[in-house]
Amino acid sequence: MDHSHRYFVLHKPYNMVSQFVSSHDVVLLGDINFNFPAGTHAIGRLDNHSEGLLLLTTNKAITKKLFQGTVPHTRKYLVQVMHVVSEETVQNLRDGVSIQIKGGEYYTTIPAEVEIVDEPYKFIHSTFNETLYVQRSWLMITMVEGKYHQVRKMVAAVGHKCCRLIRVAIEDIELGDLPPGGVRELNEEDFFRLLKLEE
Image (tube, rainbow, N blue to C red; front, side):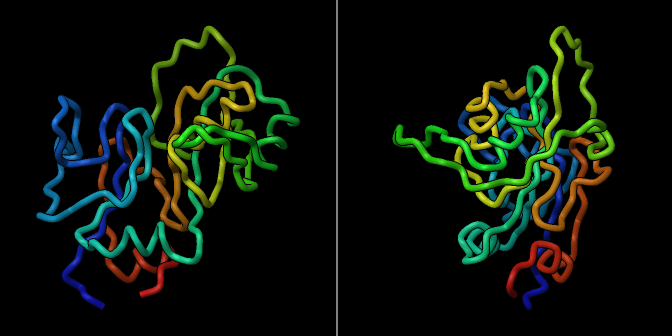
C-alpha cells in the first residue's frame, strides 16, 4: 500500500461546487479553511445545491475503484421534500420509479431503501433557518446508483419537490457531527476498510 496519499472527509456546504478550479464565479473547495495538499481532488461530486459528505484524496485511482468497480457502493441521503409523504409514495420509491436521464430517455431506478425520518437533525450537524409555510417531510434514501440528479428526479417523479439534499454516508464513512465546511482526515487503511474497497 502506498502511504504517500492522503484522504479527507468534507461536509460540503450548500452553494459550493465540488471542485477547486472553475471558470465561473462560484464558491470553490479551495475556499474551505483547510490546507489541502497539492493534487487533492473530489471523488465524485455533489451539485452546488446539495450538501454533506464529499470525499477528497490525492490518490487518482480511487474514483475508478469506488464508482466503476464491480461491486456497487451504497450512498445514503437525507432528503427534505415539500408536503407530507404517504407510505404508498415511500413504497413507490423503494420499488423504483421512472426518471428522465441524459439523452432524454427514461430509466427505471433500481430498488432503494427509503424511510420517513422524524428527527432529521440527529443525523447532521447543520440546520437552516427555515420558514415553513408548507408542511415538509424528511426521507432517508439509501441506494447504490447515482445518475445525474437522481434523488431530486426520484422525489419529483412521485410528486414531491426536493428542498434539501444532504449526503450523510458512503458505505461506512458517515458525515456524523462534522459541521458544514468541516474536514476530517482518515488514514489509508481506514479509508479503504470503511469504503469496502479492494486494495
